[in-house]
Length: 157
Image 1 (spheres, helix red, strand yellow):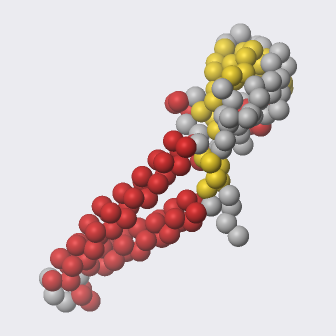
Image 2 (cartoon, one colour):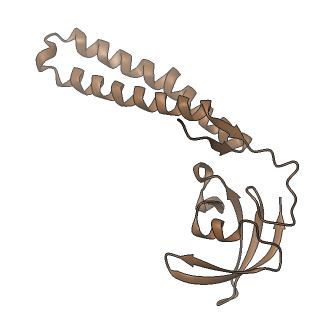
C-alpha cells in the first residue's frame, strides 16, 4: 500500500509541474538520444545507446514514483484549524531559553520542508516537540545538538 502524503496547494502544484516537465521535456529528449544512438549502427558496442537506455530506465522509474505520490497526495485544508495550538501549517515564533534567540518556523509536511524558507517538518525533532503545544508553553526538545528548551511566543497562520 502506498503512503499518503500531505501537501499544501503550492507544494502539490510544484510536484505536478515537476512531473509534467519529466513527461513532456525529459522523456522526449531521452527518446531522441536513443534514436540518434541507434542510427550510429552496431548496438552491441554503442556506449551512447547503453547510456541513453539506462537514463531512460531511471527516468521512467522516477516518473512512476512521482505519479504514485501524486495519486496518493492529499491537500491540507487549513481553513478550520484553530490557532490556539501548534498544528501543521502553523507559523510558530519560538525563543531559545538559553540564548534568547527568537525565530519563526512554519510547520509543514516532510516533503515540503525547506530550512532556508524556515519551513520545518512536523516529523523533525523541533516539529514533533512543538505539535499540540500552546502559546506560552515551554518545551524541552531533544535535538542532534542536545536538549534545547524553547518558549512558544506566538502561533499564527
